[in-house]
Image (cartoon, rainbow, N blue to C red; front, side, top):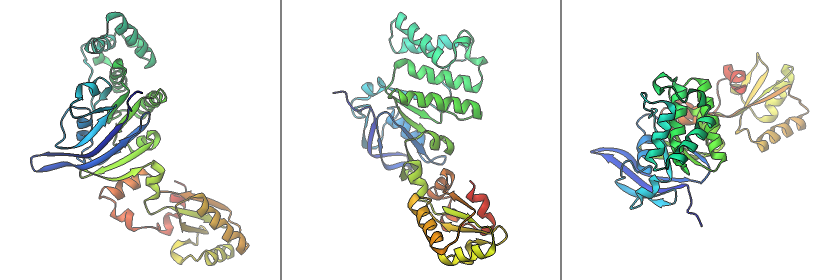
Length: 330
């Protein structure tokens, strides 16, 4: 039986002098999934990647990466992983094809296999037409695509992507997202760090939030969003009597009402049972809402609340009436 190709880490710790960067973190990454590690600058994301990819040693803790232990099996791990750092590691003086062939040589592929794999990856990444051009002439998006293609020359089962879309325009970023999703569709495991919360929301099967060297939350994007106060259901009514009746039946105070827009804002996690409960109460009162919209916190809210910058978000469970309609439509 082949060894598991994910990541299992327990108690990883790293300090530089008296600065503690990682304070005993635990991670579990299932094979064939995308795992995103979020956190503010200096939280320890890149240090985590460097430890798990064998570039630096942890001060304490244990980890298994791609079926091999960090202790004593670093060479075996390196043979199964690929790493794409924050900046494209391409040689600007070489052509795209030459960069790829250089990687093939570093992986000790024979000449025929190296050329076959190079041609296939250049085609997959839509780089065939520029294969003979030097990388220095490429746009940022093309350089990142080439960088990822070079990572795949060794056919890794697990890839570390450390902020892979930093500096890319929205079109190039979405192209990278598609390429990453194609990799996981083939069974490749992706460990992603990113500053773009939408990127984690779109791509990741599971997300961990790292702050001051500790994992402060972990789960799916939806699970993390449900942890943060501020979700609500917004109901709009046709007239004032209907609004008044609904407010009484639902037990809502004046702070939830927008008299001008005839709306009520009900704190809620937006789940189906919560919606059903509200609609049942309205039906029992003989009141019908003209419109119903749901707002749940996004990953921006999660990030701010969990990384020490969100005390205001954390404390406010019901947004002010003036923002009812705007936020309910987010």
